[in-house]
Image (cartoon, rainbow, N blue to C red; front, top):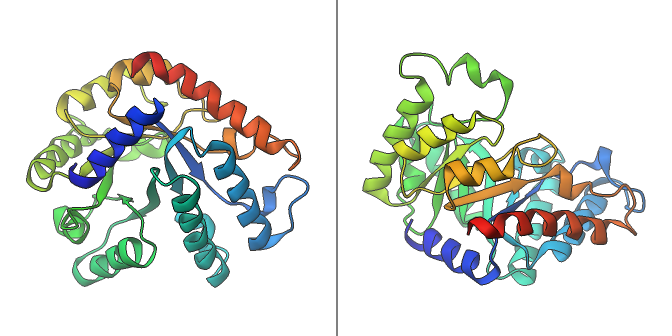
Length: 269
């Protein structure tokens, strides 16, 4: 994975972790002690970054939570990314945006994400085919994580259709595109059957898996690492973000939750 993969390996080896901390700012769920609105959401996220700066390989801001706050949210997203750069210089930024559109539109999405926000990688929806991904894949210094086998129950509506199922076709195609561009990864949910994780790994060797669903969603960390291997980013969002309902206690409890996950990861790395 060119530059992204090199940085990922360096960070992983330096801190002995594959933790990715999801950043989903929700003004309606802020722990007690934070101001309301974008200001409070920003303070919350900065506290989380402070508590996990030496434990996280990557941070995954979810674009929708910022976009719903309007222009203040977009500015907050830029500020949080820059704060991560200062507080955890080696950490990677995965923007969870799930973009997927054609031609000139995709080019503008890529410019916004990679040039304006300065994210290192992005999540993409492959439903419109390779054409919709090219503007992102051409950015050799960045990475793109393609939705393959997701954690949500509605995944069965499309991803399991056909024989072999569609998610396996996506994995095969992405492996081919990775051979060409060297900067693709896959989104593979932690709550899926472990044998399905194994199958995706067989179809996509050497690619980094972004694995959401560990923590509050109930994904089994040990099974994921056994079946998917150690070229992964294990994402945890709510169990870390909302480890406490009180700001005074949040840093300690947030760090304890992140540390617990990292300790469980280390025997597999």
